[in-house]
Length: 341
Image 1 (cartoon, one colour):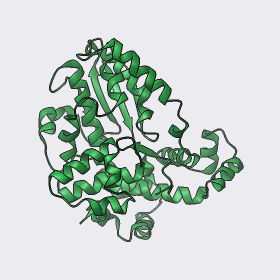
Image 2 (cartoon, helix red, strand yellow):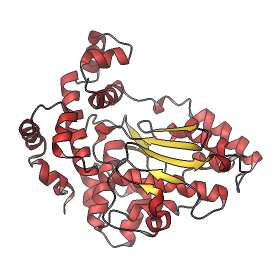
Image 3 (spheres, helix red, strand yellow):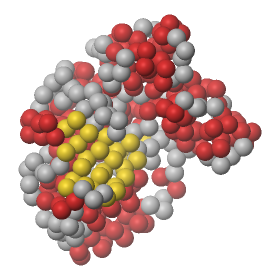
Image 4 (cartoon, one colour):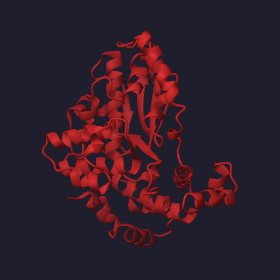
């Protein structure tokens, strides 16, 4: 974990949902929570900021414990209105679907300060893109849950089930199936470069089925006030780790590249990291470790390609690094040894 403090967080709504599902299925989830420094009481608070890395780990381990890597799709697609608190209402109470989608981007950081959600419009589609920085490691289950949740919200807005959307997911497909996956069928493309939802442009002008201008004005005011909360800010360590993660994909993760991208000198960057109790080399190693795990677990990329993306000139050097990081070779990580019982 890059930062022992909860400076990179996700609001606990999602954790509450999967814990309740595990409880319903009679699964012992307490050891998973304990491993991540959480208690049963933490799962009853809807406003708690959960460390992002811990949240992703819990989702992955819950799926392994349930032996069902598709359970989150239907669980989150069917969540009742109000689940996402104020974000739900600035989306669903907006007059037009396009306005609601713009509000998702506008207010999304009320739910997390580490995941980015953007909306843009082309001549054919409105496109919602969800980006989880690679340096957090495997996050397929959380990605599946987020994708299903927002497709479910679009379904409620246009009153169509399933809604007229298609999607791409930057993860390999789950082994298990679910009614949600059968419902969407070939409209979901796995192993994509990005996680995106495509809404036909003619749908964007539709009135939301739950539009309520009086309620909208109230929740928008509440959301705008909440955006001024300093606790929404990310730490410098997280910003640097995110830039390193981006740099790895383009083949440049030097301190000069990262400091320039952040508008700092290399020396200023080092001093800021020293104040947070770390240094650039340590963050770089943690990022490479987490990105390696994500590629091995969440994708079907060949090991030689992963080694190349992480800057290793030989597969043998990459394999040694993986053994040093995890105590297992790449093959075992890919088989899920870290999420086993």
